[in-house]
Image (cartoon, rainbow, N blue to C red):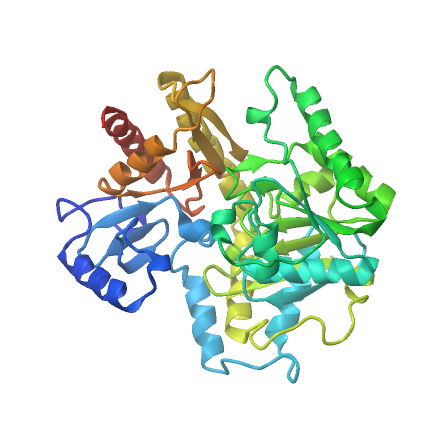
Length: 454
């Protein structure tokens, strides 16, 4: 049996084993404490598909997937071959000086796939999610000649100075100010935690009213360049933006000359059952103006992209966008290979299949365990929210922390999300087998029972 088809197995009795402990000690001595490696004492040796092995021979099923980087799985052969082939030609060519075919080919592919407005689209590349979000805002400001930006509660957009200001959770930005001005925040439509007694329709109206309040209490609409929205919030708790809310936001943007940016850093590249989650928006007649994406765009190589209409993109003055490593040839080669695999193997369909399987598993558990307050998501991007009481919905982050550690000792790697850390986020590689999904759900329940008894 190939390693990618195996099931989790802990051979050292507990994690970490001795070889991993030795490397973790070196890590602690050499690496800043802010990058703490003790919460997940994992030292990676190899990975295939949705499985990886640590230095001690323990085998784990990965439900984190590099926080959305590994939709295509570990060590996809086509990507490995593409990286090797390009590396033998040249490793780097700065785009201020050289043009390489890989950059153009990948940009052409994204222009075909990205569902933003515009008959003719253009794409340029950066290196990370934070960089592509920051560049998208530069583009929006250049096009609108305005300065204001509206972001939302629960948002995560990165750790640069601008994107820290956009990110809602300020533990990511403690002591890092001052931050850029002209940034305004409105409530994101978190329907599970909407005002008590509201129907979905009433809740959406409430959230739209709160957004409009920004124009009265923050900045006039004619001073706002853009709104930046995650179609499915990641760090905020895996919360999908309701389509009726998106339609209303689109109308507000259109009425006021504001650009709508879809941040698909985490939810893009087939994760939600579409190639891009904003395809759901486009299908409903409310496509975004700009789409950003990163993480799984190149299967693990550092790369991010910004796509918009040619009219929007060509408004940017020379010198405003770019960077030394942007559109690195090796990363672009990996991106081209990933796109080919996503298309030829219909990865959106894989996400829909895996999502249906996992959602059923989680909702079956929800019926058995009152501590599971909500199961939500799109495709194979699913959030499982834990509460102390299903009526009061008080978050139970402590239970989730115990659950993660109990699952780790059984060979299942998971991560939390949400303001209170009370959501398990499901981001397993889309190549995870049905047998692995079934085993993962078995471990999940066993770990939950253990966490509840602690």
